[in-house]
Image 1 (tube, rainbow, N blue to C red):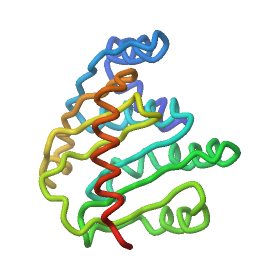
Image 2 (cartoon, rainbow, N blue to C red):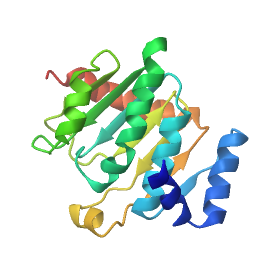
Image 3 (cartoon, rainbow, N blue to C red):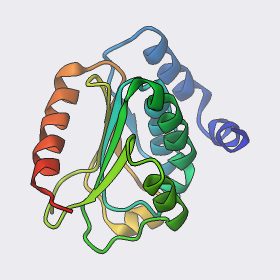
Image 4 (cartoon, rainbow, N blue to C red):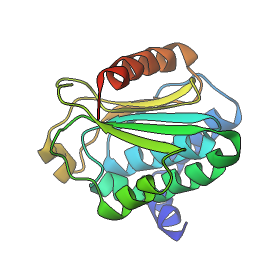
Length: 179
């Protein structure tokens, strides 16, 4: 948690207040992000607010971004176990690295968290959707953008319409992956 506190300190207090108000008041409000810190902060909030399920489409699970949200995903697994909640992750780069420690965690919690690797989903934006109402959708970016911490996207903590579209796209891809 100290890591998150340091991260919040590095984000504009007005930005944090907007996010907190959107969560508290269940607002349908698009919240843009333009940095890696914003992306991590919003994703942590989405994961922490989730109650039933999380679906993630990503390029890899071994980056500065996932190093900072993996503890939140682990906490969600613990939270979901008694309720049969589920975390489903699609990695869209066939040879993308997965953090070994996190892969071992996934292997020991297969009832709650599952990872599949897609062969061809080129051109899809990365996203995280939770409980069929919250999401964070990234704009397309390059590996250099990741290095430069230039990650743009939009989050919303109460937009079931967009969340449903993202989930449908996720489910279509998920159902075609055989590994």
